Amino acid sequence: MFEMAKLKVPIITIVIGEGSSGGALAIGVGNKVFMLENAIYSILSPEGYSSILWKDPSRVKEAAEKMKLTAKDLHDLKVIDKIIKEPSEGDDKENFNKICKSIKKEILSSIKEFNDKSESEIVEQRYQKFRNMGEYIKL
Image (tube, rainbow, N blue to C red):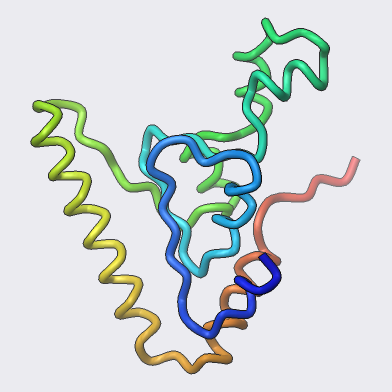
């Protein structure tokens, strides 16, 4: 991740299903992080979280809610940049093609956005994005 953070080219990442474990950490280093509407993204599964925190794997649903791993939660926390909508109707092949078109549109748009930036601006944008993720609450 340290090496990836220093890359002088834009990093565009897309969570399309379940982004978890160590791979989830690397995804967060992107200049742009997109996520399909029904995907989840977390460094630990809800099953693992409930087993570790409560020693009770049956509390999976509660763990998932606390973990804030949905696209909406992560967008609100500024962990991801954009939610890519998924079609709710149609056959699988048609929906797959629609999702692919949406992903392609976001990738091309992001590439265009970074075309005019210098290498140092790309690295700095990534650094600032990472530094501004999440939310801090003083108790």
